[in-house]
Length: 201
Image (cartoon, rainbow, N blue to C red; front, top):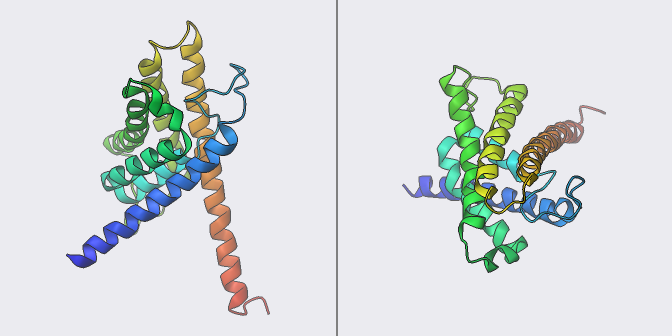
């Protein structure tokens, strides 16, 4: 039991840490950039949302068991980098989008599993990065549609389409960049390990 608890703790810490780091990069760099469509920086939209990649990878590896850690990472990111969100009296303004974003990723994996395209990591099954990207795009579409519905009452006429496409593009682009970073990181690690074992001598 103690070993299981340690494994769960390590997994949760890894997911939360990775999520918060990616959230920090997104909030510090991409949230500060003006939305090219709207003009001003939008408080709930990013045109490159790296944490979406963390959500997709974590759910691919751990399934529904990753959800609590992802929600915790998202909440910590909001507290650290979006303190203004807590000044609103409407809790759904920050709790709603957070839950929708995480659950959309899980729902996308379940939809793919139901149609015979199981994309969860399984022993003996090679990971298809193209399929993971497809699941991530589906999750982005589900999330964007749900966020559009949530924000429909507070957005000016016509801006709901902007929010939809901004969410969709931001999530897909963030996932693509996150996966590229992972693949180049793994490749560099393999080259570094081979170099240290003298294979290049």
